[in-house]
Image 1 (cartoon, rainbow, N blue to C red):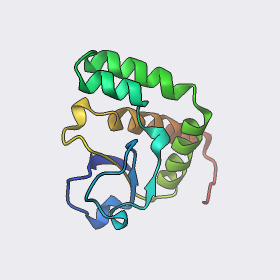
Image 2: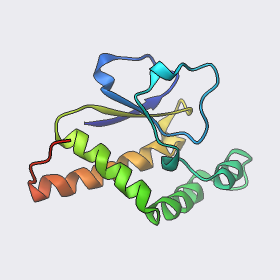
Image 3: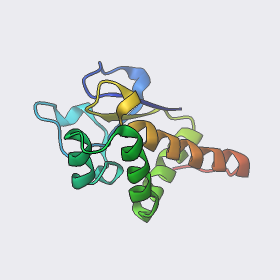
Image 4: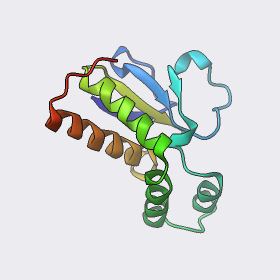
Length: 129
């Protein structure tokens, strides 16, 4: 299963592999709070600035972010690896700063990971990490 939550949420055993997907390391947060950190799964610096400053709304942010990452083979490979973990029964939790997922890129990354997971399920491949 692939879940998302804020880095400010409590750490739970059910989180499984905790994956930080923000461009910058969160101040005051210990490295032990995350198992992996994938900067590539975050928006570009300029896109993030435009959104945070209100130059673009979330709908446009989503579209531009998806265009950024879908072209990046490294992003797809990372999402495939997360999907493999989930396919093999491991819990994975994508984490970033935003407290509300509705306006956060992590829901978009989860969707891509879930699309990759669906491909594995449909293929019926026996994959072990």
